[in-house]
Image 1: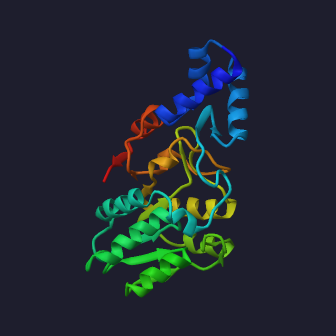
Image 2 (image 1 turned 90 degrees about the horizontal axis):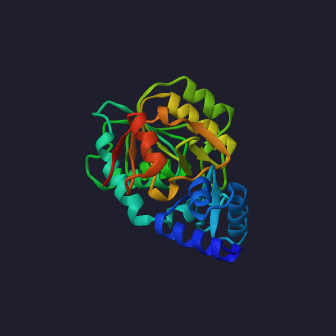
Length: 259
């Protein structure tokens, strides 16, 4: 099979399954793993896919370049809104404490909290996100706490030593966490090291960790791994994971909730 035929086969397989692995492609096409890696690199340079650990996933707008919160909120809008509504059931009883990570999917949870007349009332809500804090403040949430630190212009997330110190001093009932990538081997990943450090501390500060991630994050692998799958108690997503990720989630006993 010529290289162009192999790459067409890879593209078609990727479109059908949403993810390909080097091992499966090499076996199916009867070529070496190194040949497949070269094909994947060529397709990545054309913007068709993005390489992941051991394989590839379809390319998405913006690729691995970190995007603004507004840009991410405009993607997979319906899926994220459904995830946000479904995650409401994991809010603790009135008097409980909640950590809200910055991000577009956690923003959908905040939107859902601000829509219902009772959702989120009577809770102590803590966040490092300037945009999320603004939304909650405008909705009249009476126990809102903003973590200090330096706000990143790109995402509006507070990061740095002050943020980390504040998180190390608290213990909350539940943390709602977002991630840019969810991988069977590397767990939860994101692009920015400072935001990764804050996310890691949020996970450590919570008695229960609820990950909010739509299916576009499955199999994606970014610069910094901030938590292993063993850190997560619940995954709220829009499509049931398959393959290695599904196996890893099951092995860790992680509850997977679909809207």
